Amino acid sequence: MKTRNLGRAVAIAALVGAVAAMVGCMAGTGGRGAASGSAAQKVYVKPGEHDAYYGFLSGGHHGNIYVYGFPSCRHITTIPVFTPEPAVGYGYDEESKEMLGGRTWGDAHHPGMSETNGDYDGRWLFINDMVGARIARIDLKDFKTKQIFGPIPNLSAAHACPFPTPNTEYVFAASRFAVPVPNRPAKVEDFATEFRGIVAGVKVDPKDGTMSLGFEILMPPFDWDLSDAGKGPSEGWQFFTCYNSEMAHDSLEIKASQNEMDYIAAVDWRAAQKAVDEGRATTIGGAPVLDPEKVPGIVYLFPVPKSPHGVDVNPSGEYVCASGKLQAEVSVYSFAKFKAAVDAKKFDGVVMGIPKLRFDDVIEAKVPVGLGPLHTQFDDKGFAYTSLFLDSQIAKWKVGPPWNVTDKIDVYYSIGHLMASEGDTRHPTGDYVVALDKLSKDRYLNVGPTHPEAAQLIDLRGPKMELLQDFPTYLEPHYAQMIRAEKLKPITVYPLEENTKPGAIKRAEDARIERKGSRVDVYMLAVRTHFTPDVVRVNEGDDVYFHVTNLEQDDDIAHGFGILWSNCNMQVEPGETKTMHWKAEKAGITPFYCSNFCSALHQEMQGLIEVRPKGSPVAAVQRPDPKQVAEIEAAIAQR
Ligand code: RUQ
Ligand code: CUA
Image (cartoon, rainbow, N blue to C red; front, side, top):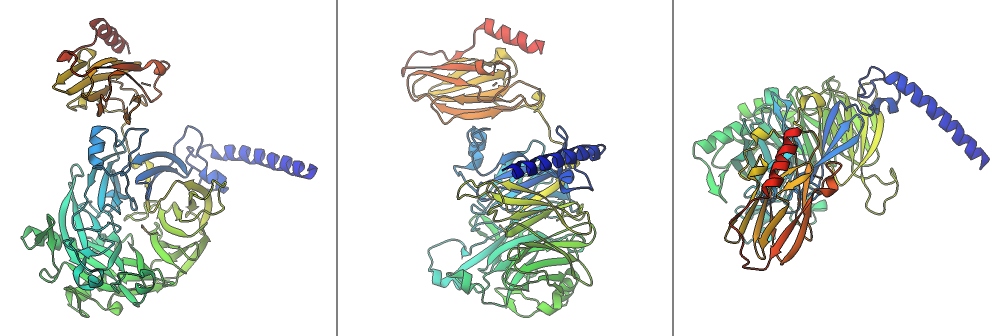
């Protein structure tokens, strides 16, 4: 016991010393984590100071996006996307409810930052819902989900998605599971003849990011897995890996691992769009679908060993890297060789109308990285980093002769994706890579059988990779994006003068309750520390729509609006108006209140709904007491 205490005292003394040294060292680093020193110093961001990077981690089957700061590895916020979120009322107010379309989950795998000239431009973040074949757009001006596009017709799940093109002309989706197209009754034994895959090109409006369907291509019934956009010399092409070229419909873990080679499909998206514009598509399920048998020149196949997973184009755009899950190497293809073979029409047969190239005609190098290679990212010094699921390692290798592995680092445990800082762009920064590990096992305090996911920050700046920090995440990041913080300039309030929502009011004297039949519209103002009106009279059976405008223009002063005994709650941010429906089920009194702590008198920010018996006489328009209105106006003027 005594020795243990002594050991502890020594440890504490050492720690105090270390912290003192650290504080000394940190002076002048701007709190963004030191470039040299211990791992602790490198992730230390002084209280009150900001991280150098934003990280956007997909939430997997939690259906949202987690925002982290790096190098501190602090979880900053969660952006709800495909799943309702009661704290902010996402999926509770009318607009977000409509966007979700009644669905309450999604499986979010691959966040994709919008790009200009192949680099992150900080405008939008796209994220797929694999299971629902949908793509969402988050506006990085306010970190809010603005559009959910889909379900994309004919597509059964969208895993190879969204992977934006270098100027965000398109985001893509490809079906993970083959089904009949159009979907109709069929026998699963007829998989090879009746079923099809689909690649979809989803157009992105360059001004506001609005997505719409550009084209679809009928593909063989393989399981389309991952994607990446060509850049530089390969710009204009989109690459997709697949497994199950065996076209098995059961026992896939055995039957889909038989072929020596599966494929990468290379789609010429400009040619595909042109073919649609020329009217060469057939409409299936409302989508313009191109059949490669009838429209040649839009897609080609080349072989990849042993059930590939990730496909990643290097920063210069010269090489396409793919890893067979059951092959201990990364296959590096030369885009120039691919293009030359296509131009020379050097084909090795055709698969359902799609010309196939010879492996030897396109391969540039085979890099022996280790077991279970999945995904590859890049730095600014000509190196690539490949995650090794089976070895639980990251391998660093040289892109270019001698194509050798120069370093390896252990990760804990079973890494899936990895994310380097701006590591899938034309100009990676080469600072960090985050390992997104599938299993955390013993790395954290035991919280029962549902373990957290494990992520690890690794420094790339030295000659050898260095593990800096472990951090748990909630279920379940797949891919992520890391962008330099200075590229994002989010707003902190919604300017009131730009609020043109139909339900918005900006003065207390405009607060009112209007009735048309059994529909009641409440135009309500929320400002510290009052709802106007705070007494609402309705009749039993009424459909009440609360349009709540938060008049604040100060940072971080959001008001909540929650109604007792109901499923109704939302958060209204400074300058924002939100609408929420509430059904007056039962005569009696129903209180409502501000559910988001906003001020010293937050607790007083409440009101009453007087629900009268059905058919009680109520005025067509009710206005709050003029004296109360005058008080509120005076209070607003004083701020
Ligand atoms: S996957 S572990 Cu959904 Cu992107 Cu590769
Ligand atoms: Cu408004 Cu609390």
